[in-house]
Length: 386
Picture (cartoon, rainbow, N blue to C red):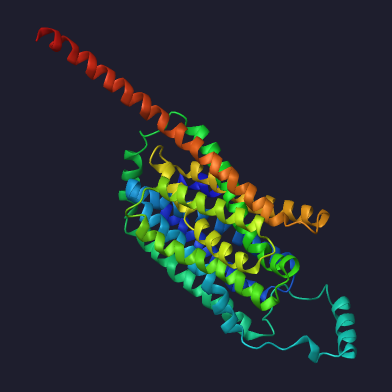
């Protein structure tokens, strides 16, 4: 929300550079945190900077490329999926083998616990971690983000943002007749979509082990299949976006999500169906968010506040829907609540998008009908003259 407001009143490159710089500082300081309060502050810094980056990245792509933004939007979100796939692997390589907790005996633990309780007040807020590999894991990713932030600062000082501002100002006259209604529907659309995406990716491992009876290695592979097909299809979507309209990609994604969720519900005990439907579901979910942002830009100009509004919808979805599933699954442990919620979310998105499309194209339909009527009226006297 704050990032959306700031995007409309300050330079976009500067805001993104500052957000990434704040992320860098948070990554550098996190391994040194020795108090829970300070760690909470660092996580809050991450939340603020990530929120501004999520909103600002989408707005900047739309401001720079306008109607030609779909491939660039897909590339932006592909980089997000690729980073989410690679960063944990890099961190695991950097951490290496860690000392097991089994090496500590109970007699070693008791004096340590007593000393910790007696010296809690004297512990420093910042101190070097015991495992230096942990420090290098955070520092390597933080250094990479710092380098990227320097590029944003360079663009800001080179005054390259004037072109983006001129493009955005030229598009401000394009405002849909039902601008606010479209944003509200897109808010709901992303609420169900992002909520289902995060929910399935988060609960898939536990669902496969407890409900289907897979071992942990198979369940981990199933989780990797979901995110792997998700990242791969976001990469392929860069090519698809050059020849397919965003509305077409959203319809194909909705059909794939609805079909895969339906098969998951009908054959919830079948491991083979779970493998196939999970891969299809991950591929179908990949292009929905960037295609939705590109689609709405065709009918109305998206400002920073508008982008923040529907991004907040997706954020609330990834907060609320997993929490609801956790409550329902506890009450009905024998039912595949995760699959039911994902199917319900797919049905909601499949219903909301045609309503949005009709609402967005309704003024265009009336305008074309009125132009056709005016042309017929102009041609009528000449016909009588003949």
